[in-house]
Image (cartoon, rainbow, N blue to C red; front, side):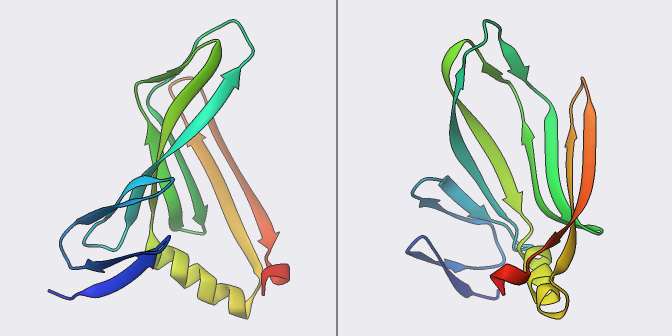
Length: 136
C-alpha cells in the first residue's frame, strides 16, 4: 500500500493504508486510519466546585465547515464529581477536510464554522463566520 511519513510533536511515523498508531506526548495514542483520519484522546483536568455529579455519557460533538466535518468526538461513561476530576476527551480529526479548508483560507479568510453538541438531555448547534485573515 501507499506509505507516507508524518511527524507529530517530533515523532516521525510511516503511515500505510492500514490503521497505524503511536504515542504522542500530551495526547496519548494517536491512530491514523486508512482514510487519513487522526484519532486521539486528550486528558482534561476539571475542578468542579459544585456539590453534584455530572454524568457525561453519549455526548457527541463536532466542528464543521459547511458539509465538511473537521473534528468529531463522543464522550461515553464518564462523570464529573465534586472536586478535581480527570476526563478523557476523544477527538477525531478529518485531516483531508481540514487541509481542504486550509487551502480555502487562501482564497477567502472568512470560513463558516459550526459547533454542534448532542446529548440525551439537550442539543446545541451554532454557526459563526470566523475571519482567519490575521493568521495568513
